[in-house]
Length: 635
Image (cartoon, rainbow, N blue to C red):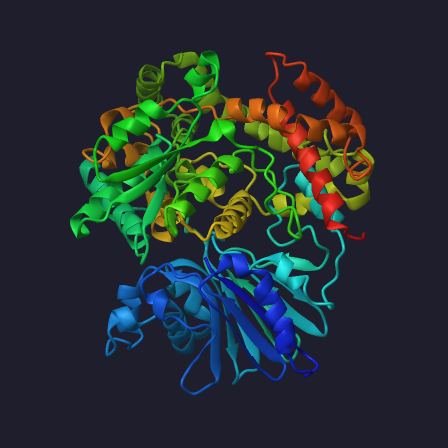
């Protein structure tokens, strides 16, 4: 996990090394293995280095090409090196001597603005093109690597984190109240704005170019192809094809000069990654995979039975080839202080557990950390196949799948039919009609009752959110449509930015095999009956993991309820903080419906068995209040 920064003055004034140095220094936590800056005239680039891959040990960034007209700074890992090196005419050099930034620069030289679509991997990079007097910036398809910028008539400045932008006096320190409204309404579809007025994020799968003419071009270079279909001869061929793609996604993320770690929750996603990585590493030598698991031994038995995954974790560990580490997450603080100072408030209730795992990994010398975040969305749960069967009138197949699912999940057939087959055919059209009528009559309301109604109206929350929602197809009745929508939500770039900054805090690079572009493209193109088959959700992953996963993990349908520990620890550890915000809500009273927040607090501290959303409601308001008090932004 490295860091990039840069400045471009449009009026020709020279970039001062001191300004670049401040930006680089404030991001020291992202790279302990070196810092460097490059500047010429009105443009300057900077970099913090964290070594992860073997090639990165040789990398010097910013890097200038031989002719001196192209310069790159990058936080990047290129996974299709084997294909790109010969395609770019670099085969006359030993592959182990070619850095990823050199590959990217060569790709830009050959393909220009089309180069990002040729790259497989996670990246945020900027190239100064001296011939065009232009900066070219790009971010990976899922937004794994962060990229923020400020743009005015005088300057373009970018960085891996917002705090570096704020080092410059030209960058305003003003609160973006629309983003506050989005935060309270749990709306993530605007993928550009931040909590800072006029500071933006480069959207995932986009490139940006800006030159001396001051004109900025922002363009998408990649999207999922909903028309592509994969047709193979048998279920076995589908499973083998998925296993090949998934193994490649895991394998290329094992490229490391340091010990490699992985989450191991006992769930299907993390276990599939860990067991696949174990096989790859065992074939390459004696290197073992470090695994990191959150456990909750101090919870009462009546709660522990819902959250305890140790049975499944131990089944994986028993295969051998692992160096396991357990972290007592029941001793951690849910209200962690990460990202509040000089960044943005975050709403990630399980982040405290990940932070505990990352800290443990750092202590073990691990620098590469595999994670199965939202593998279920990448592969697809597949339940929408039942909706598709009902919509197309294939009743016999529908009932076969419903009967099988009822046996596997121990649910009633009526419940499955209502929830997954019939309700979407009735409720979704009715909901869409209601939204359409609401837009016509201008009676739509915010999704959350936590937001102050007057504030929501003042910033035009509903109107702004509807602009983004209007770009999303209103009805998605096929399994493929539902799958595509789940992968293109703005929630994932938001989640990845949180993960990026959290792993960086512990000198780690997070790597996510399920968000490999090849895996997502493959899974989306599968027939619906490969995503849900014989009553099994996530069917393609389950069947492909035969002889790789322990059977009790491969075929499990349960899922640990992590909320039990969060609900308990939030009150135990942060009860005083919660009370202070409730009693002195001045920082948020213009934005938050205070009676709703206080009502949630009273129900929460009553320890009622009926508590459901109250802890999350409280965390939403409290995190915002704490961040506003610390950020000291003007409006």
